[in-house]
Length: 374
Image (cartoon, rainbow, N blue to C red; front, top):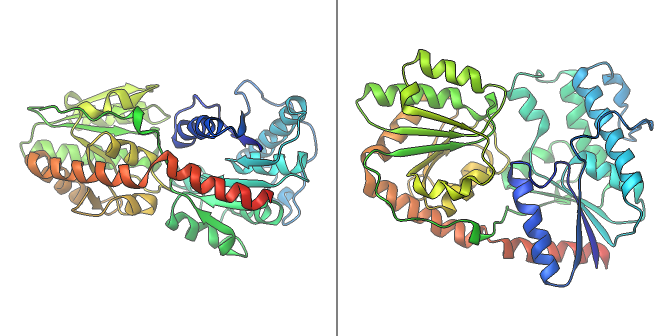
């Protein structure tokens, strides 16, 4: 069987999709399945000129928005690149972004095309204050899900909570299947260590949706309570300077290290003690699974896929969104109790090893692929 994995970002980009799809390809190729990866290079801009039409809604009602117009142009660019580069036929195409899914079905109408929705672009835009609820842009992006349902052959998503979210925008919620992310366990090597000062790590793109402002406020409270710690923030993004200024103004800059983007953070994660990310939304939250596989104690918000990964008090701690006091108390409990955090870390590792195997993902995908081809 010949399968195309149609990504949006290049595989070397940070994020759960980019880290997982190459391992899917590697494992399928070991099984003698012919699998290729396709994506839009970052240098491709403003090449596409084909008209874009959707059958389930009129996107031109939303024309004139910078965000919508950019999305449409990117779709045109993806179409241009696909027509230029893909001349072969495939038995099935697995897309990992709405643009990739719509373009692939347009270019290969007779080929089964399924899609995994890994995250919500409109939620990210809302939380990052780029659009407002029920605005024209919001209506445009939520309408895309019905367009996907109308044309594609199947949809997968990464958590039950995110399936429930997507179900409000499609006609048949049973059309959506859930496959939790999976990881190559060889990438993660827990290391026995003893840090005299607790080492806390947060790993994400630095945008408002990740709630790092709340984390900095919690760090202020931890310091006021007399606790020693170091917070390591790995990642980059548009609010990095704002966070650094905030840390200085709050007098916690000396307790925080900003690393910027790091290509293979899993090589460093095992040396820390606690992973924390107070996100305001997460479809799955791959970094929590990766931190669990590195045997760290987990602290996350009680939303989306995070809440499906963490059993509060057993393999991590959950706190409400935007709740500085609850986050401070959770971090204080772990900072002051090495035995408790080690217990949570071990339980997190055991759950992750059981539930987030790449082998499990391959088996589930094989079943779905064969269902659509046969």
